Image (tube, rainbow, N blue to C red; front, top):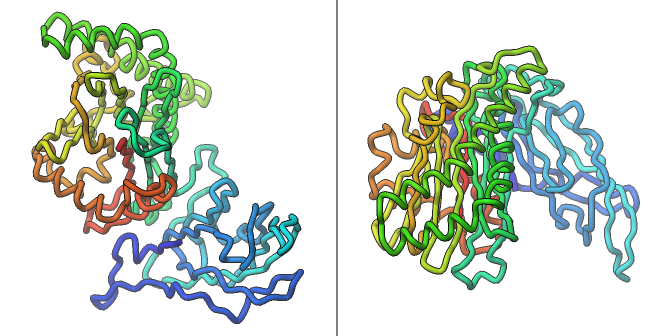
Amino acid sequence: MYFSEDKIFGRKDNNKINIPNKDFDKTVGKNKKTGSTLGNLPSARAGHPYRMQISRDLFQSNLKAIDSLEGLEKTGLHFFPDKKQITGVPKKSGSFDLLFNIREYNESGKEQMSTHTLKLIVEEDYNFPLDEVDESDPYWKPDEDVCAVPVNKDGKTRLKKDMVAASMRGFRQIEKGKIREDDFNIQYDPKTRWYALAVSDGAGKSKFSRKGSEIACDSAVKSILDRLKAQSKSLKKLTIKYSRRKSEHVRKEIIGRLHDVIARSATDAYSNIVDEAARQKHEPADFATTLLLCICKKFEFGWLIGAFGVGDGAICAYQKNKWYANLMGGMESPPEKYFLTTPGIIQPSELERRICFTIIDDFSALFLMTNGVSNPKFGCTSDLPCFELWDKFWDELNSQVDFSGKINDVGEELLKWLGFWTPGKNDDRTIAVLF
């Protein structure tokens, strides 16, 4: 599977969308060991996002593993062995021979080594001036990231749900030669049965925001799961009380527990950003980033969802059949004024103001997204609370991503969906879904 800039962002020439030919050229690509003829990799285009999912069909063999891949060094692309993916933005056009050293099973079922050479053709794009990314940058990160967390493995129980998240470098960042500034982190603790989700959008004007978003997500989620080990029982007791009788006193107690878990985790993330800035002799504002956080757990009486947000984007708990769309975070305007490193944000009263929770019997999906998704899909901030728009959003997403299928396929499909084209709104895009 692959896609090009044309396919992702709908780049048009002469009112037509040009998509490179997906068909393999069967004339080159010999296996040095067997002499069999293999097909080329799908062609790429200079300056356009490229992604190739490698399968056993590519080598016409029973592939076990790829030990190494040689020849990508000059292309600007990268190989990720654990995901069996080639991804990135090609720096220049040309024909490149790629050498795959693989382990495969022969006809008798025994493992053997073999070497395959396949050709990658990168087409030139005369209409796309490109500033190259400095991959030696200590804060460099891949153009894309995907994570799928299978929790409900049997697919039957309503006590568990699965998670998936995807992030894609935006066309605007590609054009300017900037590294992806968005980030995410999603995790599930099987011992406490709590979910933790985070997405963040690094401020475009801050020179190290790409690292700030990474630190914010990773630090906050780790801290959340650690803190929930101590707060899980008390949260359960308070949630049971509140589900039976919605008193203001109990509500405040729940907010207090969520402050200890979520808000303090955001403070931990802020502290880690400050520490990184000090180590590198920079200002914390150079690492400015938004941060949207959620925790979630299924109890006998329903789901407790706690949320916290600094900056724009959106957090929404959505239930299709009950006309329910609870907007729980994001929406801050003007967005350039609200970041985790903004003075005053981490004050206890300000943190508590940003905490909210809900208890519902079930939901179709819990969404966390950066403004690269919320802006083109919902327009102005005032439209975010509209259920009809969330219903339309879910129908579109569900038509292109099979949330009832294999969890790994969901990740690939979600990343592909992020390539939708919206004129003038092609920032980094990140979304996390609990479903």
